[in-house]
Image 1 (cartoon, rainbow, N blue to C red):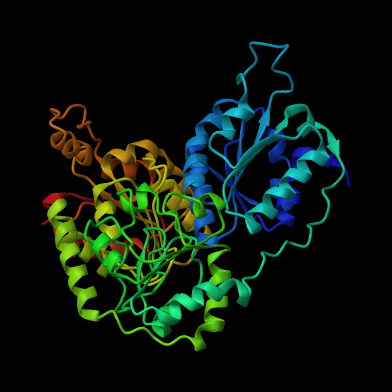
Image 2 (cartoon, rainbow, N blue to C red):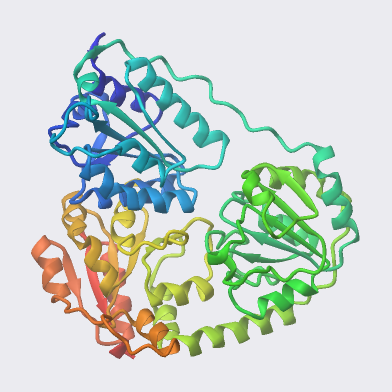
Length: 524
């Protein structure tokens, strides 16, 4: 059945498992909206394209499936470029579909016209291409979904000229049989197994690409200690006695890593935002497992490199682990002592947050999925809040965008209906996307929004002081956040004690609409 291409694209996406699209319609992309309802896809109306992009990001992180967003030409695409940049650095699968003008070289002064819209999007995506025919559009969508499965997941952008979206087109082809990643075979593991057989103090560093539920068993069988990156938190589960946690940025972690006689890094870039130093600190052999060749060839200069996904490596390692004798070089006391010392360091660096964080953690179900913003509260929690499950705390780690938490949390809550989801934001970052409260209310989300309100850009203020710069432009006038939330139709709470905060959080998970919970340092 022929339909306008814009409608056919929605049907194609539905055939490939897409059930939610985030976006904002406009005169230039309205043809993309013709087929959404007919295809059985839910559309979430954002208040800003930046919000739509972060929602798609949050949905993708919650489900593992690509988050999809529809935007218009020009400003619509520009507005979603920040979320695309965040998804790129954090390896999040996102597909952004936009319209584009039919002609930009010979015609000027058009609505939403840019010099080169496609090239602009390419700066923050894996690739950005224009589809000038229906078959080209179908081919690019197929390619995007194939690459989401087979390579490092990163955002893609496809733009289609308005006239093509309006023109009738044949249906898209049926989905291809998805490709399969190459399995890790015993010969591939041989160098790693040889090293593990003789190691007395093996150390694993698990990043966001480690992606397996086998790591707790593997570490236990090997007698190995571990660190995780922020994105890898929860990979070892709660209570593993040799888990140093997400404390790689602690200066003392370099000494611990130097004491290992083998370091195995799985699915972690070991970039600046992972370590906050140039060198990992290892003196022993380094083994790297990663999908990305750029990571394998970086300045850390691994002795053994294996291009593979973390899940495949974990399964292969588990199958071969019977032949490895458990190591006995680590002690639970040294791990516990290090973690106690580092927790005290974190508390001293940003005083007063740890007790509030502990109380908040107690009030949340263990399977809560949390989306946080660039705020001191999150910086503290990322190092000392242990997660029971992997991929249950999402933070804009690489690009470091303000305004991420609320819309991303909305995307996650849409994906996790009936499961607990929460947002942690700072007062200044909340200004960036607080209009998305309207979308959260419309959706009827039981979403606690913990707003850490210290009345300023405190992290920047403290950085200026350390740099001997007189603090400037670090205080902005805040609204009455509780009244603002209520104006949108949300609930609100301003607890004056930790007990009141805990009760407000518990109630928020059962409320029929979002609840903004304003927490200030004075709560202590």
